[in-house]
Length: 63
Ligand SMILES: [Zn+2]
Image 1 (cartoon, rainbow, N blue to C red):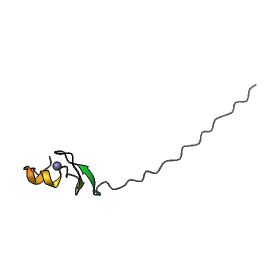
Image 2: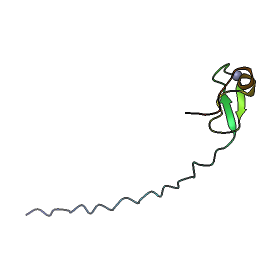
Image 3: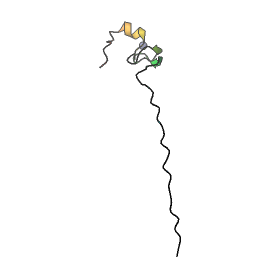
Image 4: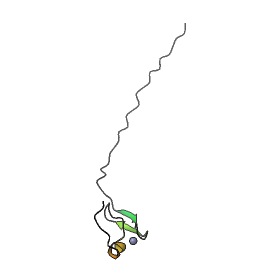
């Protein structure tokens, strides 16, 4: 007769995911889509440097 050891697996501790509000946009450096110049982005939809924005008729309405 063999004694079988029963594996009593402990439930893995649930990892608490601390969700950060992604709505908060932090100002960061972005690369201009037009001239690849690194500039300080003011908002999420800001993809072109102020120079290019004023130069070309860059529309603010982001699709
Ligand atoms: Zn630019």
